[in-house]
Amino acid sequence: MVNLSRFFSGVAGVSRLLRAGIAVAAVALLAACASPITAKVTSFNSWPANAAGATYSFAPSTAKPSELEQAAYEGYVGAELQRIGLKQAAPGQTGRFLVDVTASGTTRNRTYLQPIYDHNWIWYPPYRDRNGNVFQGYWGPDPWGPRWVGDRQVTRTVQVGRLQVRLLDTQIGGQAKAKPVFESTAVYEGDNEDLPDLVPYLARAALDGFPGQNGGVRVVTFDPSTGQLVRK
Image (cartoon, rainbow, N blue to C red; front, side, top):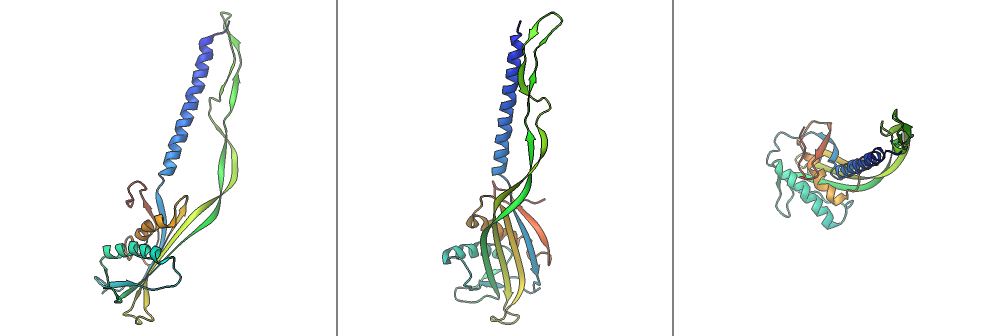
């Protein structure tokens, strides 16, 4: 005699586990989409003590993207410079500090180890209880859950966004040979981020804590939903 209640309870248990697995996968996908935007920043400076309230202007360069694209990137950097107390020189005039902004986007292959899990289904054999009732066997998930069986090497292509900001002091060496007094490079490496979308974050990261420690390397993180810098 087959105990149908046991059979259907086993099926229901499998269904619950499948639904739970789908829910976990969905949560993981949403978490991946909402992952923080992180930039690694390297800065060097010899910032003059009398620079408060000084003016700046952007240095011309031929190694730049289109004029409109470059102007947008310089606008993001200029907003951060004004936030720290510098002032943009009047049109047609050269500020004390020449600002050089260079943005670039590339791709890179990264190799890493990905864990492999075996999702076993096992056979629960039929059995007879002491009253002579026969319980039908069925297939069900391993009660111990997925089991790690090793790692495999995976290569994926990641987006790399890079922004370098340099400030040169025309009071040292004149306009032709202005001396660099600040240099900061912010680099993002991750998935599905285009350079124009990244530069506002990279500009903030490059100038966060200005002028900062000479030779310092730090990681700056932004909340993807609010765009706000995450302070730890």
